[in-house]
Length: 602
Image 1: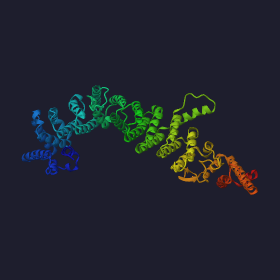
Image 2 (image 1 turned 90 degrees about the vertical axis):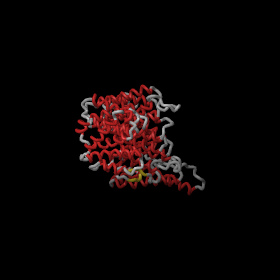
Image 3 (image 1 turned 180 degrees about the vertical axis):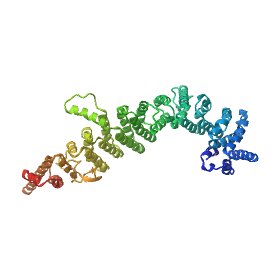
Image 4 (image 1 turned 135 degrees about the vertical axis):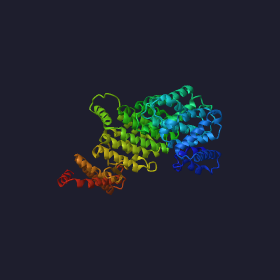
């Protein structure tokens, strides 16, 4: 760490919280090899010695009076003061002392000192360490100010604001920290609106200077004002939530224009500002403007030059931003949900691990938080009109569009995406509940198709079964089997219903118990839904399969010729075993009379 940073951070260090701050500073820096540290030790030692010789107590007030007096004497001629090594040393010492001086003392005695700061800074020749110390002094004087009269506050505030676009990044960083502290102290005061408008005016001025030129053109030269725009954006990412609503909204409108430039550096700076706004529980902005900016990020997602980091950052912003807008204004948020889902889907398809993770988390959170019962019912009501022969009032509803987008995620053919896709779809089933039987029918059938993939191409069967288990839990067994009938008959000599077979060991997730169960154990749930006709059908089909097996065996015994039958003995035996598994699971749920009635019918 360099000397300038050490001096600038002295007020925050615990070792300087002793009774005699000067003594603590001397202990810290007297053995430093750096010349600047020697300067501050020399200044502090001289001030401390002078106070001792006068018999004065070594208090923060005494140190402030002595240091301020020395500074004002040196600053009479700014042209020579800025080149004096003692000036930045005194400013560094003052920046340490000021927070420990009672505000009442500073208000009554600090006026002349405050007036001296602009003169020295205006010379433009102070070293970086001196500028940073001066900014800290200005910041503290603004914080303890009464904040009733903007005309008295403005001179120091204007200096602070001017340095957020300084060429030196250390100075910019310090001025941004100071601006945050000052604006925080302005909250609820009469000067907040004026202070916010000054930021907005600075922003507008540099926008006009920058015009439509990108901040980083191909030639490598920055247009006048373009660089400063980035600097102001960087400062605002920490303070945007502290300025007035009118100024915030004006800045957000300009940010929309900046996003349209499609410059990665500008986009990232705007995203940082939006992230701050969305993460804070404040409402000093229009939800409509925020939502418009979130939707404006969509085109940048599909750009080829987008990096893994930028895509992950976009996904995180869409996550927190969409939830924030929904909490402020549900009506405008739900209309834009399809755009948000599409954007997150494109991020998932990027094949970047970090981006996939962030997009998956965002989709799951938005599904859980922003899809509510009213939105779901609106879609179901329109679908019911279609089923009943009625006339829809409009095209696909919002929830139908969202479900179609989610179903489209299954088209991804990058295998690492399947796990994330199944997670998102499971979350959708959990949220939609029983309405999944109307809104997610195609998704269930598409999920079933994955079972046909060979093992060497598909290593996510467990996740697939969990996803189908979510569908079963949401729809209920009866509706689930209506969408995806339990076909136990072989159709090509080797496969029966690929999604619900495999000797009865295919597993679905039992949501209530949190463990895997054979699919046949889910069927007794049908007994609770007055679907015993399904059980009767199974017993009848079991008899048919058994008779077919007997017939095949008899044919083999009576003839040595090969039987050209698509249903060979092995596949028939497999089908019979599956139906026997079903029967074993179902019989405990029946009483004696029902068992006898099935026996008679068979």
